[in-house]
Length: 113
Length: 111
View 1 (cartoon, rainbow over the protein chains, first blue to last red):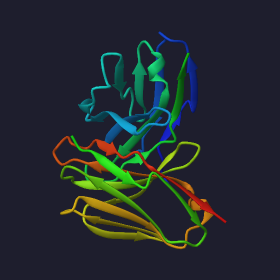
View 2 (spheres, rainbow over the protein chains, first blue to last red):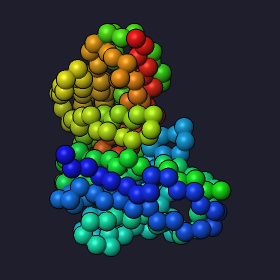
View 3 (spheres, rainbow over the protein chains, first blue to last red):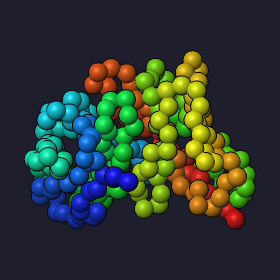
């Protein structure tokens, strides 16, 4: 069964460093999403992406964040200058259409020191 | 902005018991998801529904659009059902595909 994959599974970085989180959505899906979950808190929406552009973003998704689909398979989330409060589990998701269910990847656990 | 509330926050059950988890939301939606999150953190989609009822194995999800309420039922619960169950809603609109999540219900099923 097709699945969303994410790399790395864990990342530790120093405050101020840039990180890139990678996702490979399900191959025929067109809609892509990033969510995050700070430890002990709700999952929060960050951004949705369709047709090579951002379709919606949350207040969390400020200028420090960017997303890209550099080729036909990868979908990346970049944090330019990480802060302590960026420590969280980051989930990628994809769906075939707006009406279909979203399939989640296993997550990347990011720790900023 | 949609507010999603789940109850109970924590639930402990004996193996074999019938379990109900509730979700209510404040604003009209286009769809509601029930998700399962295991201790490792991964999220699995259980159901997406916009009306009526869906069943998959021992899991049943219902939604009442007028009352803005959904329930997830687990029949004949088993220790492997122990996980966090999360309700998430999707707002209507061309680009309104983001999900708004509840805080989750931590379920522990004892053998």
